[in-house]
Length: 102
Image (cartoon, rainbow, N blue to C red; front, side, top):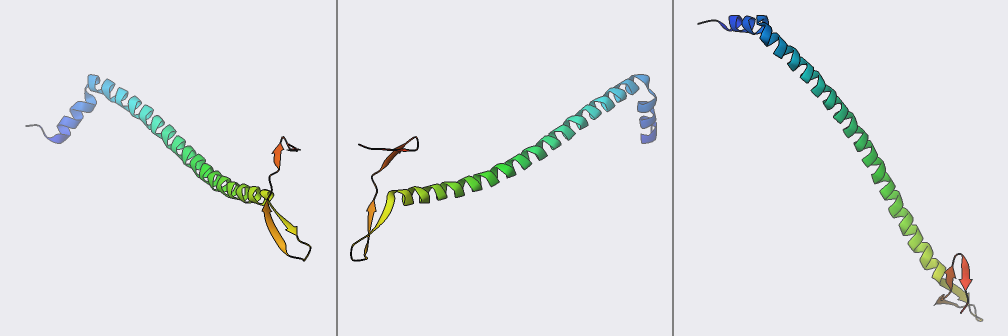
């Protein structure tokens, strides 16, 4: 019964095995290249996702501000004769930056 060393020597000495070994090394390099590419792509996508999450947070803040400003645009405060304030809702309609008079 041959020892493990003899079996390994046979694999590396046999020319048909060497061709397979060379092909295996080429495929291994190709797979390592693909893995490296995919790791770089994942890193890039993680960075982009982080950036998109920051933008989403900023957009949410902007939407809240727009909502508040829209409310303030429709609410107007009039000072009465006796110094009291009354709150009324403005019914002004704007189109393309100009007030529409009906």
